[in-house]
Length: 253
Image (cartoon, rainbow, N blue to C red; front, side, top):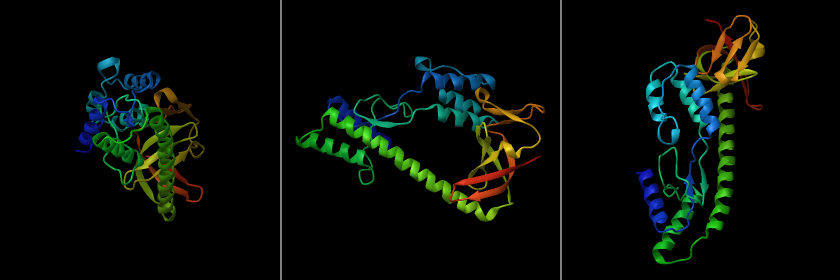
């Protein structure tokens, strides 16, 4: 109902060619798509292309659903998407497959919705309207403030999670590798919604090298592989809420 309401207002104003602030989500960049396709090919996952030569994401998600690759493919696909933002130009919403979309349903908590309410109200009663340059100026500012608010929210949540784990030093959990870097890999726990890092400097059995194009780390001597989506057992080793640091020690199977 929310999406239908947002689409209806957007389409109504677009049909009347009235300037409004759209919520847009552009198509993924070609380079990001190439990286995603390389992953599918490396995992021998068959896929087909949809309109415009873009892989059929829905078909891919259905193909990997319930398989060992589900987490990996979902995570990398999400990272290949662009971020949604506000704009005075209607570029459609790729994620919702919508030709015209805006934020209209939450005017008490989101300023862009209030702007759209004003525009619709003034359209119905003949009041003054915003110009397209005014809307674009506001769209840029509001998109930037949205990013700042999201970053603050994420950091607070991360620190709360680290604080939650502070008195659990030494406890053992199972999780899944959610992200890989040149200095370690992050593990998202199953039992609690917490993510921490296993530093490569704590792995003494080998020297591990990041193979970025394959989303994995490989040991030079043992050829041991750690890849996004692998399940692992860890022990909580260090938790510092002030520095927002949570370290895990990997437990061998």
